[in-house]
Each structure stands twice: as structure tokens, then as C-alpha cells.
Image (cartoon, rainbow, N blue to C red; front, side, top):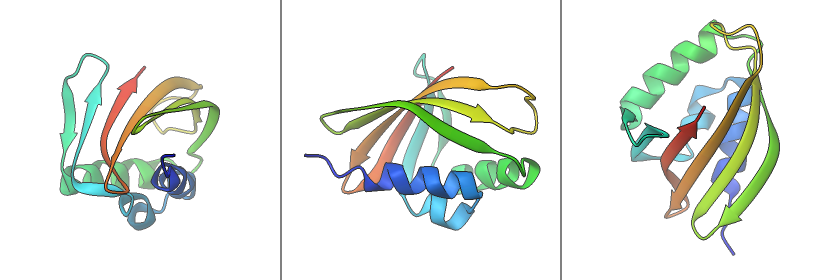
Length: 111
């Protein structure tokens, strides 16, 4: 059975807006894509910079898991995100996490 600890820990750190704890769960060459396969971010620095900015601008940021499915080396989370600085409402997102060597190697967001 897949150890999904990195996915759990990154969510906890996301909700605490703790960039260092958040990034500790991702591989240095992690890739973030959208639903079409377009790359949004590549690598530790790009993710660190992007999420640091979002965390600092969104003091009420919170993600709640609606449903979680684990298949092979993938975790699919249906998420309800609130408190983003640029979105006053609720964002409905599906995040697909690909785990490799006990770290998140790739994330695909469906919005």
C-alpha cells in the first residue's frame, strides 16, 4: 500500500502557510501541470517562490479534502479551497499527486 504521508503533510503545511514544511514533501524536480498537461511550474525554486507569495498574500488560506482516492502511486484529492487573496469564494479543485521515492514528483490540477 502506498504511503501517502507526503500528501498529508503538504496539506497540513499548506493550511498553516508554512512554506518550508510544505516544500519538504516535494522532489527538487517536481512539476506542476494543469488539466490539459500544460506545465505551470517546474522545480523547487519555482514552486517555492509561487507558494511563498500565495501564502504571504492569503492569511485565511485553507484547503479541505472532500474526497480522497488512492490508485497505484497516485493520490487524487477533491478539494475545497477558501481564503485565496484573488478569489473571495470557494474554489473546487481536483489535485492529482504522483508519488515517487516518498516525495511528490508531479501535481496535476483540474479546476
